Length: 101
Image 1 (cartoon, one colour):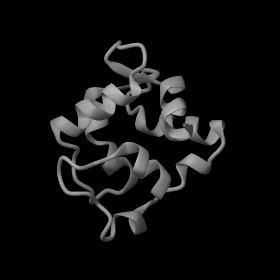
Image 2 (cartoon, one colour):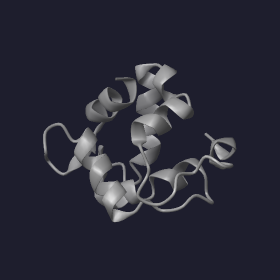
Image 3 (spheres, helix red, strand yellow):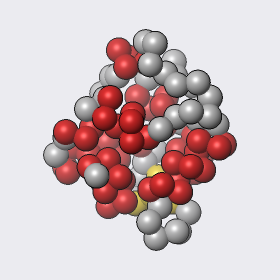
Image 4 (cartoon, helix red, strand yellow):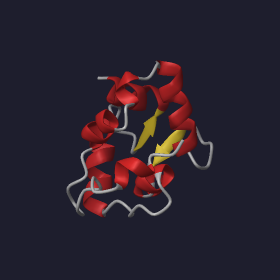
């Protein structure tokens, strides 16, 4: 899945990344739950069934190799917004809920 077009002129400045806006811009909000699950599996780099904080830092790079790493502030805000059960990681159901809400 390549979103290089999305990053030309649209990559937010550090500490301004908004995951919900990103999901809208790249069209993920219009995907089926199964398609969103497929994206989750790509982001879950270690196949643990969760997206942990360390994996989340590299979120943008999973969409475009030349993208920047999320800042600590952005990573923590993203995790906080999606981690409904407060276990410090994002499960597939949490990810789907955030993307499709």
